Image 1 (cartoon, helix red, strand yellow):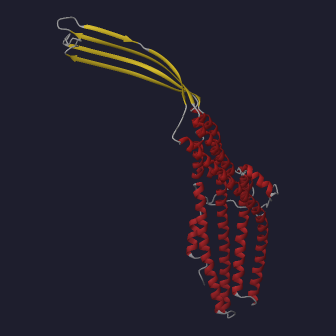
Image 2 (tube, rainbow, N blue to C red):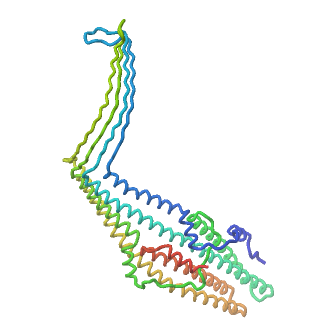
Image 3 (cartoon, one colour):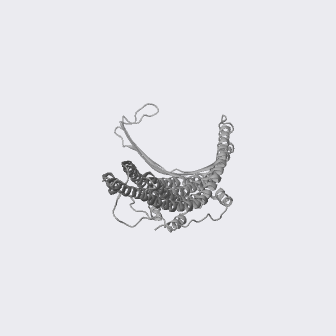
Length: 459
């Protein structure tokens, strides 16, 4: 009698088993991913960083005000005294003591700078693109979560089918051994059953490995371990796309697809770059104004031989105001401005071609996603019938084996066909859901509402 449940399978099953808990829903897993997925947190940080270009561009047009304060002190004690112009020393010692303090305020205001004004307009497009990219990242996260989620469910279904097949083949092997012992079949039938059982054991171990990998891939996204996931109900609603027109979906995608919108904004940003570089040929006008106020005092003391010291105190409080308008007109930059303008033109041309490429790609992906939903609906229905047909065929083959009209190989083949049909049917149901979400993503209107709708199909 063979060992029906090898130790390897028991060990892997124990490794995957976790404490009993309520099943995690797709919506719950997505919400955890929003909090823990490093990719979406990175996208958020990039968005917030890029959004700062607007206040930076605005600051270049606002007044630039600075305050400078100074305080100083100087003390000099000179032995030998001061020297007159005639070269005669007035005394043997002189002391110089000076203290000062003051402040100044300067203002710079741009009056006309074409490049800065255009950069401010361009900043709006940059921020809009950053926001679009962030929203696209959230949609991509939703697809990644759904794919990882249903990959786990598909792996669990595949493993369950493999376990069921192994147990059925084990019963077939036991039956073949008993029939051989009473002389009803040849030893080759037993050997064929044993070979089929060994293959089933190997398949189950491989499926255990695939299930563990699927769990890890989902854990990588949400940063936590899940042990039980809600699966779709037996009566999964197979809803056709609404509207039921691929052209309408393509029209929506060409106006709302986030990747395409981001690329369109990138082309507009590149167009602004041309204007900014052309603005380098125009004059720049700015106003500069300043105000200063200082308080300086110094005392010079001269000690003469046998005479009273001469003290000379001086106090000054200078105050100053100034303003000026500067006009800078570039006459010749050695060809730098012309080169930069031409570079911006080429960059805009590349952005335009990229927009055309992404537009065509978006149209193809939308049509493909639409057809994917339609075909998957038909495929799910066909595979459901295939499971029933293969199950009926297996029963008939087993009955034929009992009366001797079917061989062990026929039974093993029917069992394998049923297992394949079950796993394919299970996978097609998950593919249908992912295709529904992918179509919404291609159209640019995928949202949490769609996750909530799919979540209603689970239990």
